[in-house]
Length: 126
Image (cartoon, rainbow, N blue to C red; front, side, top):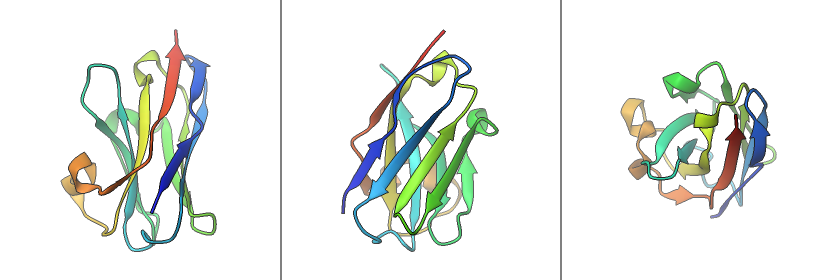
């Protein structure tokens, strides 16, 4: 199973980007997919997660209201719509997937995901 992230790029502060993560098959149909990000010199941090079957979402508090996670089951693709971007959002964004749903803190931990995309760089200039 492979995850392919795309959609990163350069944008000015206040702008928007939409990231995509395409899964090679439907292995994760009963699980959860998520976005994480990692800025230079920092640890990988949770951004948002979505359950594949019923699209239940979770967000990191600082991104709630600016970012929207969604998925298209027909296309096996997850999205992250990012609005009102700030320079501190600059990071490599990774998509990840796990075979089971998970709850609470579990879905916020990078270690609980067994499948990862290659990352896509988002740069927000001030």
